[in-house]
Image 1: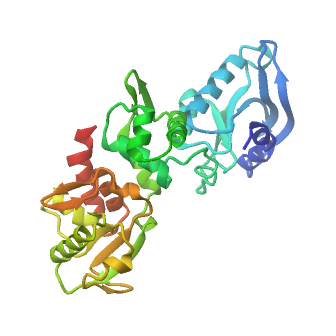
Image 2: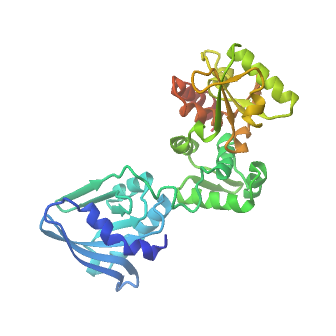
Image 3: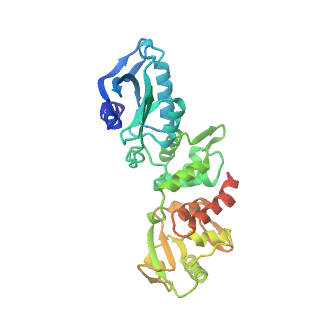
Length: 351
């Protein structure tokens, strides 16, 4: 969405924010106001809340990520050097204001609104705050989703190897185009998730990035086949691994099957294995397809990136700690506890 389109929709967003607030009216909305200090305000708005008048100075952006938010706050601060708007209440407006951006605004005592329904206005005796459960612009309006299949290959590598990367190195290692890596880099900068060093780029806060990924990830993104076997879990995993090795098919244990490799205390009664081949083919290893109650899950990857950084533990191929954490977090049972152990034992020490 272009900035001009965002600006045009400000009145409706403000009305929605003030909905049900007693004695609230918008009396004037002026666009592209030229100030005496040479700057141009996107919007200057006069309104009354609880019967008291207030002027708003609004800066709009096409993105509500932290970097753009800080830019807007800085511009609003410089605009208010104009005596005509020095007492105006500064407001940041975007299609979607992320949680991190909302926090930045609160710390700076700047109001914010978005087209989703999130808002926070605090001036005089007035205080209005709304949080919308539907973040429709969060990923859909982003230039690139850093957690989409191909883009997430880049993120997975940066989480798995916490070092400075050159863009060309990332593209080669992740098997994606140089252009895609550049887009991911730009989006990470927008979210303030990236550090640039003399040696290259790295994640500023790997754990935070992983937590954000976990919020939108589900192992059910993969094609899931549920099966039953009379054999025990370890025997089934061995049979699947042997078949895959013989047929040159990539595989890797995940879920509790993978967690057991790094923590012998883990107990489980269902094997979970990524297999590169079609599920029906691999399922020929004495496995019976079932709708429910299976003790083997075979996952055909939503993207080949799930095999990145996989390792061999005790003779078994296991997904990377990053992929293992994501899968466990999205599974049922005591998987969150197992995920936490992966985070504490393997991931945090590597960062």
